[in-house]
Length: 193
Image (cartoon, rainbow, N blue to C red; front, side, top):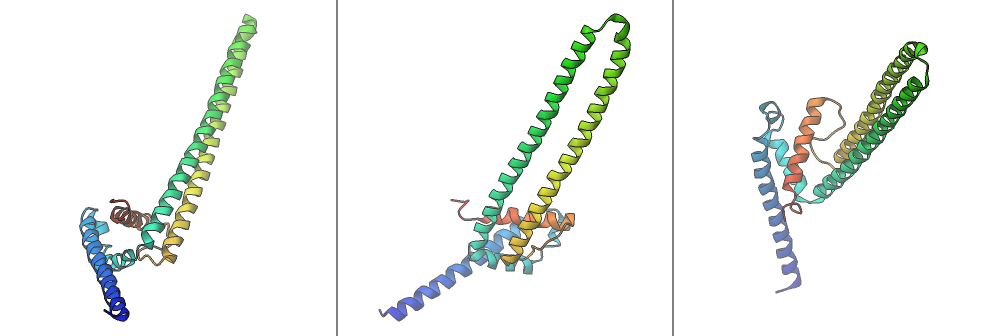
């Protein structure tokens, strides 16, 4: 058999393999789409699933999605650790204040105890209020970091040519994108080995 014929047969086989993956992915995507709430099913027409299936057949999308998932997990772990450290600082501050409270009351004479108790209670309330506000501000910063990470991921997937992905902060659009990412991760052949 000539080299040209072998190349043509090999090319035909590659095209058949790609076509087979497209059909297989489409069939699985259609099954998965049936498992999500009806209001989201309506937003996943067969045309969109077909185009996604074709994009997945090449394989690079799986690698991109897995890399983004790893970055997401590392980011979430890091942000969770930051929050724990922040809460630990508050816990140490509360414990130190309680120790100061006890030692101040124990070292005071009886006549000053009532006034000291009121003053220390007031200081404690101020500290608790400040800590609540600091925690709220810290949580908002963490949420903004997650939002930026989400936007980066949307941009990456849009640039990769994956249909259904674009920058948005609309909750239903984000939820739909999350469903699609879940589907893609479940279809990933390297995860199913």
